[in-house]
Length: 155
Image (cartoon, rainbow, N blue to C red; front, side, top):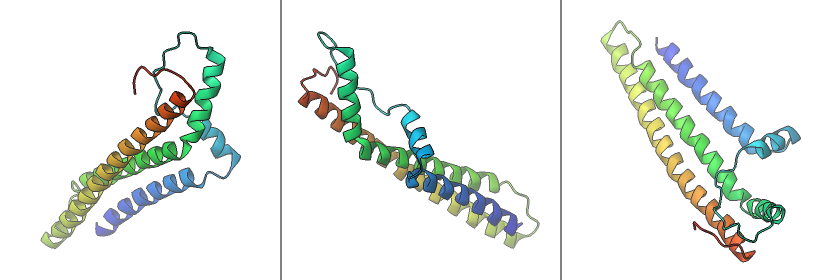
């Protein structure tokens, strides 16, 4: 039973590790294309009175390019949050496994409690980092647009 629990936790961690490696490598053209397809994490609210839409889209793309490191950090932190949530859920699910002896029950309780605690802390840290990186991304985009003489309605 202990080996089954360790195998499940190992598979969850391996899947989380593979997800983070895929997102961080970013060297292949296929991954770059998929990153460009993702929706933006922040959409600025700009007064479009007397603004040419084509010029605004070009300027917005330049500002988003400036904020690309903050966007990457926010997306990585969201992945960390999801991995922590998954680990916590795996620990919760494993706590319902039937065991036959008291020692197995103690070991299972310790393992699932640790998985839940580590997963919860990882998810909380990921959420805090994602919120901070998203705020930084919005700040960079807004400041860039203001330097290009756009009037922000939310900032």
